[in-house]
Length: 382
Image (tube, rainbow, N blue to C red):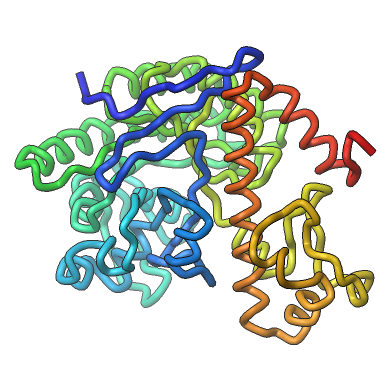
């Protein structure tokens, strides 16, 4: 049986939501937790001091991109990814499987691994389950993901089943490779297996059974938020989480809006990540408790209020909507910096508030009240 890295602290009385602690090499992580995405070893437009200031205990980086640039040789010589990027807390690295999935015209999937052409220079590479474990071990990932085959919404049953079978074979090989690199006690990172099965419940169940049997320290739920309607996401998330053990952390990859995050928390999910808050921030979308706003709109030209009256981040304390609109329209770099900071702070604060609501056994009402304001643009108390 694998080591226990997760403990449940409290279960909400009105839902499946829970708080917990994940013990990782670079310190404990309180859950539920949103992880900012630092694809190339940096959360775009955000410094590590900003991440510390907001309170993040874990971030995500991308194996595929770091493997191509700067390369494992540079990062190994630097003493690992933590030293290279000057981040002293935890890092989760994805396997590169999603990037290979998104490069459909440039890749070929076989049982041996994923062969692909670099989006940078067109060179060919093969990512095998063993090679992906090796790369993530060189990076020094606190959590590393197995190589998997991700399928999109609308994939037919035969192709979804084939992807599941290959993913399971890759999991067995990844676990063997991971056990080999952790045997000497030098590398302490934890391997997470990934549930696939697309949008077919029998395949989801089969995949979940295989993942549970593999007994990795944590479990990710893959193949969601890949273009499906929200109702379908909710249905398959609820179905899949019910198949997983309670004593392991559950991670849904690629969700970063309040609606999706709060739904995942309600179903007992502990971890989630997405580029959405920083990517949309760079494009002028800002989170508020009354719903997202598009700062470039003319109605904000003379609006000297903060982005969100209730937000306590340094952006909302010091800058107005009018000024942020000006920065965005003039293409100033500061626009991306301030918008990204606010959006990350907003989600971090949302998840922190969710943890508090779970501890107080009022998560269902908390979620309902927040989404009422977020979707209607008015507070329930107004």
